[in-house]
Amino acid sequence: MNILSIAGSDPSSGAGIQGDMKTFSAFGAYGFSVITAITSQNTKNFFDVKPVSSSLVKSQIRSILEDFHIDAIKIGMVYDKQTIRAIHHELENIKQPIILDPIFKSTTGGILQKENALSDFKKLLIPLSYIITPNVTEAEKISGNKIRSLGDMKNVAKKIQKLGVQNVIIKGGHFFSGPMVKDVLLDDKKFHVFAHNRLKIENHGGGCTFSASLCANIARGKRLKNAVDSARLFTVESIKNATKIGSGLLITRHVKGDEIESSLSHAISKFCSIDSISEHIPECQTNFVYSSSNPSSLKDVMGLEGRIVRTGEIGTVAGNLRYGGSKHVASAVLEVAKKFSSVRSGVNLKYDTNTIKKAISKGMKVSSYDRKEEPLENKKKDGHTVPWGISTAIASLKTPPDIIFHRGDFGKEPMILIFGKNPEDVLRKILKIVR
Image 1 (cartoon, rainbow, N blue to C red):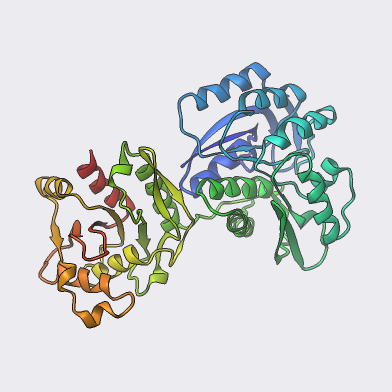
Image 2 (image 1 turned 90 degrees about the vertical axis):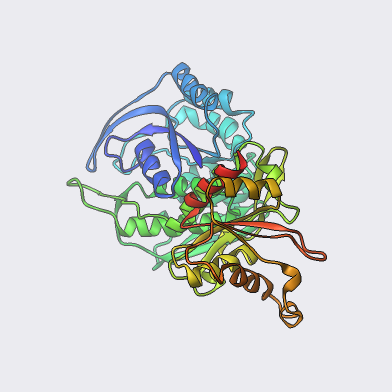
């Protein structure tokens, strides 16, 4: 998973480019950066800002996009008209989702966008974006309307959406004075309201943490509502974890994302980009799963609630990762894990005799079962076929299998299942047999 951040440099590393890189890393993503401005600030004061030339901003963007696959783009600090126009020129035909985080003023008091740049910001960057993430103060400035209630937040979100952006989330931390903070998401035409306890912590970097973690979740393919919720919870925990490094504001300290989700998401991205991988995706499509230690039910196994589907020569993720998202592949991993606890991950591939022969020639441990031998009473029980088949295949094994396959049955597609300690281990085995 590769993400590009276009933003200003913050030498305190609490926000800006540096903060984004820390957030991307927490989600297991590789972060690329385009610097739009250099600031001089610490946790107490803001001293100076100088924009990077528009020609250099353009050159930085081109250098990334011509060499690397990018899954999502975050735009943060854009100081002047020239910077905004340069970014628009380079991204106006881009297909990747753009997360736009309006940054007009630093928490340490500095002006991060010139007043005469707002018109171009609204006209050129907002229509490019998949979602915009202002706080209440920023939303008021963009819309020209005051926000005094939850209803005002919704009306302002609609007004901002009319500028050309598909989705809007307005963060309520700067408005509501009560014990709860409410954020309003306008997801196309539908509103969602999120709430959490107000944190009595003054910090530097919370806004950047939210937009960067939202960008990471969108890059993973999560539905917008789920992506926002995940980013919101990640940000709350990171603010709770904020540390007093300097003598002023606390600096937001990022917690780790779900390591199971990060590892699985990263492996799925690699899987989808394997040359001609579509040839190995079966008719029922592919799922890739990873369980927690010592899993006891499907709820302990993370998988796609959809599938990895064939798109030309590559695979495309259709659906979100969640615990309990897979049934068949997850059931297979659970059954193997009962006997061999080191096995926690698995994937299903299209059955092919040449694939099996290649696996054996590479020294992989291969086992199988015959679905036609399954007892009739077992077939009648929903969800019992996979556990029966896997337990049959591993009954005589002393060490964990790399591959288990079956040749199908009436109305049942033949299948190959690959197992490993973790998604990277499974991916390594896949590469041995598909290249």
